[in-house]
Image 1 (cartoon, rainbow, N blue to C red):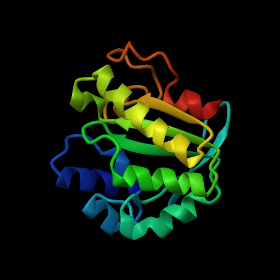
Image 2 (image 1 turned 90 degrees about the vertical axis):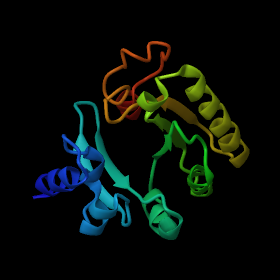
Image 3 (image 1 turned 90 degrees about the horizontal axis):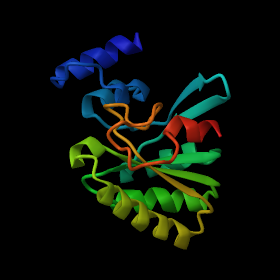
Length: 175
């Protein structure tokens, strides 16, 4: 069962709790290397809407798989590590979204817990990314500061980022 595989992979990395990021990594090599290689489709629903999530790889050698996943997307979530900001991979993902004319882009600035939830870190990343995406012709960017591990601004608003007044990731997806 996949949950057991995630629990084993998480434990082998010394983590106390299952790393839910591994849930969409269906290939054993993905779980072992901690990267996404192939496109993994997961289906889920909320009371408001149904979703097909295409988890795509970010590494340059698997760009063709990202293009495959994004080719039918109505929205793309580009995940950025708050410690690293906008990097080459971020720019590549934005360019692919623009090239494929994905109408909605969410910039999820993750790992905010590792930068002490500082608003200026988020604001600088959001500003840099939005300017770049606008140059590419991306029609809409919604930047959301998150800590996926802690759950901040993923489903519920974050108590530690009270400076952020926008939607959670799920709220945005549902609308």
